[in-house]
Amino acid sequence: MDHSEAWRRWNAWNYVLRAVEQIAPEALEDLARLVPLYREAAPHMDRPGWYIYDWESLEEAIETLEGIPGYEEDFLAKLRDLREALLAWGRKWNLPHPEPLSWALQNFPFWTKAPAFAGKPMWYASPVVDFPSLPPFRPPEFSPPVYGAEKSSWPKIEKGLRQAFESWLRECRALYEEWALPNRELQKHARWWVAHRIKGWSIRTMHQRAREEGLVKGGRVLIEKGSPATISEAINRLDRELNYPAQELSPPAP
Image (cartoon, rainbow, N blue to C red; front, side, top):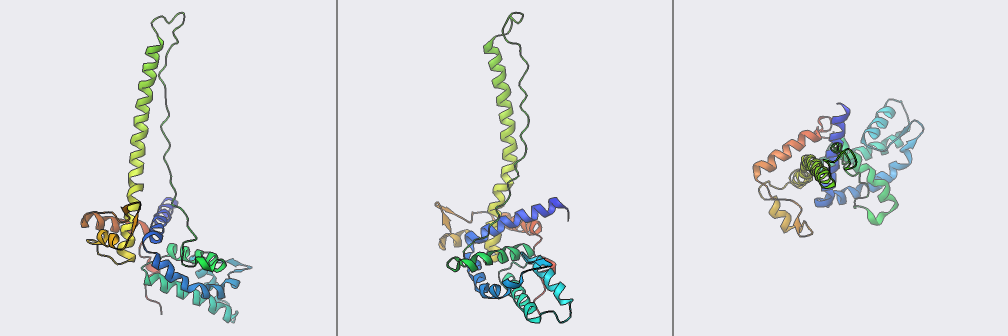
């Protein structure tokens, strides 16, 4: 996987995880039940040779320690317990993927230090807005209305400059709309994805269910309307963008 694909996947997951916080807070509340397991494992997560900060580093540490005969079995058991509990949580909420599992793991230090906020989103990496470069503005050449340029006048110069600027502005607006459309759509698609994949709502009824459950902000239902075909296509497209589900995490836990 090249860097651009990895970046797109990471960014798409950030949109989805933001949507989880907005419309599926019950998943976070359920995750908070694992804080005691994290507290048991935490003293062993930063040691010489490794630092556990996300899902992949947790798996790598366990794999490394399992290759050392007789190495602190109690310590290893605590890491395994945390790993299996996280994986069970991910499977329960249809999030068995390294990105949401890392996001889940990164909430624990905050919840441990501030128990009153357990179950509330504390770790949030905002989706990156990669705005395209604007085209250069090239004003038309002109000669000031001075000696030797009697045919020139400031009204003509101003008219030419205004026309050039308005043309450049239209080009910028078109570029922005081309860029903004998928970004605006991705937020909507992420909420559709969470409503269907995480909450298990039917594609045909999710807008009405969101209204009934009070998922409204600023008078706007957070899950927008859309034809079943449009919503289904958006969810399937986002599945591909997210690499969902991750194959290596799909089998049931032993």
